[in-house]
Image 1 (cartoon, rainbow, N blue to C red):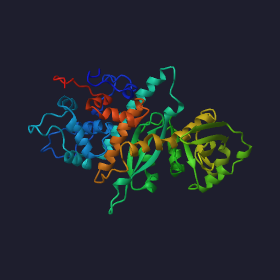
Image 2: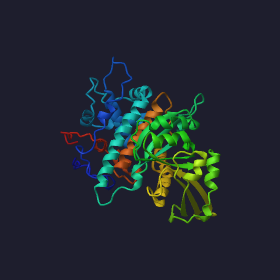
Image 3: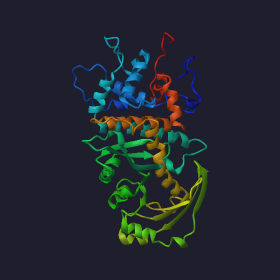
Image 4: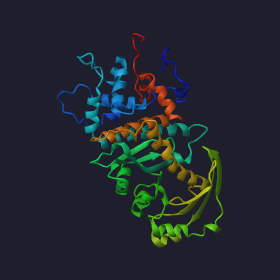
Length: 413
């Protein structure tokens, strides 16, 4: 939609392309699938409208429930009407108050909210990937890669309750959270691996995970039941497999790829070796393993000694299905999730500093942050903090990002 004369679009938003609400999928039909936890008596604001305000506030940088309510208070009436907020008979109650939003997020079905947001982001990600496939620059192999990773909500801990811990499935390319579930603690991630991925279409995808999820039954299920491939990090929590992979004749294998980079105050070089091992790993019945990977890293921070690190992984991909460079990108893409999603949630959206801790609210707030980051990443934002600041300036900049159109204020203010 065209920009208002008084609000020229900043350059950082112009990078997202034309915000044509007819071409962008509308978020609200997905939010309509979330059941309303409130009693039918006394409802004034529709649940979808409240959640849409939460989404718009989140992508505008809101870090708390109070800031979500403040976004609604700043939004002019024509925007609220576009969202679905009807005028309240008490003129001073134009939008949901902070206590109203808090009650909704505390009691909401967090699994249903995560499912709705995951389905929406999956559609946006698929559309963006299909669009880029038709261009001169096709998407990278990592476009079909999904990382399984966990994150603790540090601020949710209390004397009588531990911090909440979430397990998520995120795309590597243009990171978007496709699924999220709550686990009791980091050690509880393993038993939630299959339920997290159960409803996702993984046919042909490459699932990456850290060593915690290098479990035979899980990886066999991925390949045989879901039609996916895996790239799984190997550490000492699987001592037999780790000894087997580490003990391979790596000194006799040629270096398949090397790469050096300078930046962030350090020099870093990486070398990758791969080795076919089905006959060796078959001795311990590790499912569907075709290649072993050794990634050696050397880092030289400015003014500090050089450090070296060697990581091992196994994959169900064969040599004709992925090059050494692609395997290295899968591993780096998994480790990069920490910066491309988790770090943003903490630094831009203040997740670790959030003290929300009651009921479903911590998980719901995390889902809203996932939605904001996913939408911006899918649209091509390369600086989330700067983009969020530009959206925060005017409420009307948030709605088109979710495919919601509105009529300009007839008063022109």
